[in-house]
Length: 147
Image (cartoon, rainbow, N blue to C red; front, side):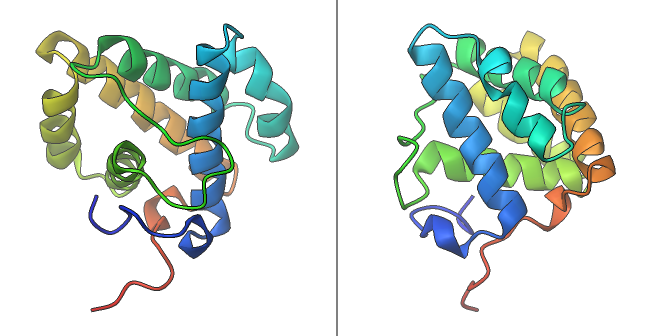
């Protein structure tokens, strides 16, 4: 999470920017009463990632509706990565590199215990589909991390 928080969006690689845009877009669509999956369909198809969308939608829906506190993402045009966005980007990265214990531990702080497995499975399936579509989900990282 700390790799991402309050960093400029421009420090993300293209895959990270797409994922951040998709998360922000999902939240924006849901907040305005539109179906996020339908609204994001063309963009995912444009990146040959339509197979990602169903599980991405499930994961975001579960996180949105079952989280202990409201998941707050920045507006679409915000140039910095917000706190919850940083947590989600780190979660997606951990899913992508197979850190199952980290994913479940983090999710257990966000959603009820009976929802952790469902979110983890949806994220895992979406991550696998992202990899097939050519996204380097496991490599999401700000480009200018200082040691």
